[in-house]
Image (cartoon, rainbow, N blue to C red; front, side, top):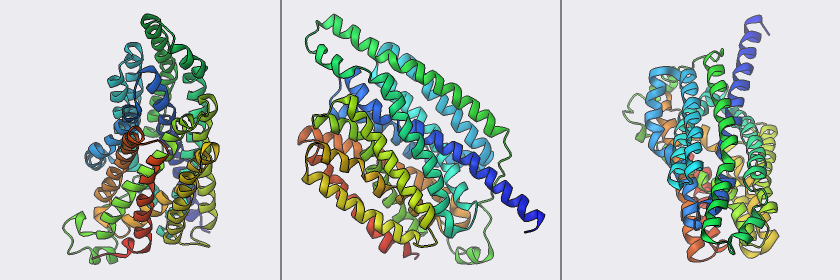
Length: 421
């Protein structure tokens, strides 16, 4: 290996470490929602449908901001765009201060939307960045490494926030039913204040990270440049909508993110509905994220040496269907556990869909990435639908919406990614 090759490999490794830190932050902020949903349901006195507006407000920002995010990246580049995204997230975290002081659910939702807006900028930059930062056949492997960073943070986040926000909350719930209105309001106000300090710390960390990224050695990647083969293939393409494999990938991504978010964000509340105390149920979300980490590690070892990205996607979809059926046919701890284990089925879906969907886009890569980021809005829609069905029927029966989602993912793995005209 020449000195130039060693330098290039070192720069690539350094870039992967920096992006890995960003994915850690993605995970920490994102998977706090699994605690915020049951926490705000108590503090703001919500029903199931209202509590899942937490996920809706957070993830719908991806749909609203994905295209503007691509425009921002065209103007300022990847590195400055990532720094900007972190600063926007810090603003969203600070909105939790007046939200907690006033116990206004609408302000909490605004803070979540702003955090999601910052994340949409970060994800629009970071996902294609890590995909292009090396050979396309091993892109799923690199994204799996990022996934480990993401879900490791996600496994830690519910434990930390849960220990603060949900401390002794089972005892509080029992007492609330017997309290006079004034005392109940006071107790709920005190409960709402618990999130202030954690979110102040989060905001400070985000600002420090923004400055670090801005001053880092991350290289810019020219996604507008096409090699000769891609340029010739795309010579007659005038719009990103002329790539069917991207459009179908976007649809698959929508349903995938929906079931991924549903599995992690609903499992604490589902455990509670199955008679498990919140003090114990809060660990189910961590189980989901740990099972995803195991899935990512499997992907890192096996892709592409032993299994293709396409086959990993097929196996993941089939495993998701099997685990969901077991959860639907059982009760109590077993049912909740198998919802948690959906993390194992979900782990390799995102890393596999992304490179398959943006393959061969060339100068359309940024806007194509934006469509995939918009599809993260599935995390807004599917959990909200689940909340509605939970109120109408029951929390367990509402999980039937997962089955068609996995069938759509399987179709993309089997046929959809091959459709190019």
